[in-house]
Image 1 (cartoon, rainbow, N blue to C red):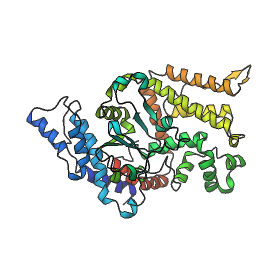
Image 2 (image 1 turned 60 degrees about the vertical axis):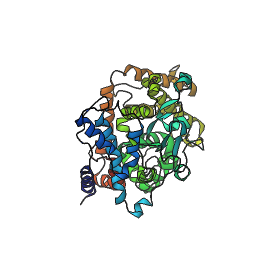
Image 3 (image 1 turned 135 degrees about the horizontal axis):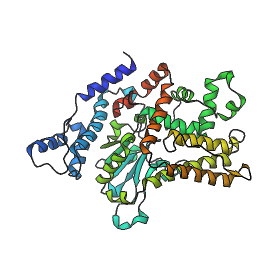
Image 4 (image 1 turned 180 degrees about the vertical axis):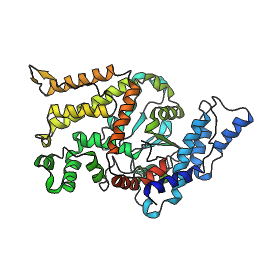
Length: 414
C-alpha cells in the first residue's frame, strides 16, 4: 500500500468516530429537545477529550454555532484518536519546546515557526487602545525571535502543571503550504542562504555548481530545497508533532492557518477579548508585515559582508516583489520599477525607502482585488508542487504523514 493510500485509509477510519456530524446552526443556547441533544452530544465526550469538554462547559458558547463547535471538537478528537497508534519510537522523536502562557487569561500557546497567531497581552478593556497589543502577524515580529533569548517560550516540564486547566491552543498548517512558505522566506529570499543554501548546493550539485552558488547558496530551487529538507532538521519545516506533540500538550483548541481569521475570532471570544478586534486594521497589519520583511532583508544585505557579491539592492527588491506576488499581496500584472536617482540605481537609504513606498502603493491599489489575489496565491503554491516528481512527493508524504493524520490534512488539499 502506498503512503498516500495508507494516509487516506487512516483519515477515513478516523472519520468513523465523528461526533455531532449533523449539528445545525443556532445562535443562542438551545431550548428545544433537538438542539439540546446536539449540545449535550458535544459535552458528552470520551474521557480522553476531557480538556475540550471543560472548555465548552467553562466558557460561554451561547453565541457560537454548534456546527462550528463540532468542527473544533473534531479537530481535537482527530489528534487524540491517533495518540494510541503512535509507537514508542515515534513518540521519542517529539518534544514540547516552546510554550507561552498568559496567566491573566488562563491561556497557553505552543509555538510553531512559520505560523501566524493572535498574541494578546491586554486583558482589560479599561487599559485603553494604546495599551492593547494584538499582533496578528508572525510571532517573530512580536518577540524578535532572532535576538531575544526568551522568544521561544518555556519547556513543557516547566509549565505542565500550571496549564492543566488553561485553554491550550495550537495553530497548524498544511505541511505543503508550510514548506512553500519556508522556501520563499528563507531560501528564495536570503535569510538562510549561508545556513541552508550553501550546504544544500554542496550536497545536491556536486561538481556541477558554479563558484557563486557554492559560496552564496543563492539559487537553490524549490525542488532542491525539498530534497534537502527531507533530512535537514529545522524548526521552520520540521513536522509540527515533533515540536508540539498534541498527545503531550493535549490542546483544547486547534486552529488552522487555512481558517485563521475565523479561528482567531473564536479564541479571542473564549478569552473575553473580542473587543480588541475593533482596534485591528487588517490592511495596516498586512502593510506592517510587508514593511518588516522588506526592512529585515535589506538589513541582512547591508549589515553582513557575506552577501557582498551574492546579491545587490535591485536583485533583492526583485526577489521581494516576486515573493509578494506569489504570496498574493501584489497582482502579477503589476510591474516593479527600480528606484532611480539621476538616472542610476539609487543609494541604499533612498532605494529602500522608495522601494517600500512602491510596494505599499501597489498593495493599496490592489486592495479590492482580494479574490483574484487569493487565487493567484493558491495557483503559485499549486504550480510549485505540480513540478515536483511523484517520488519526491511520496517521500514528503512519508515524512509528514503524522502531521497529516493528527491534524486532518489531505495530500489533495491543493
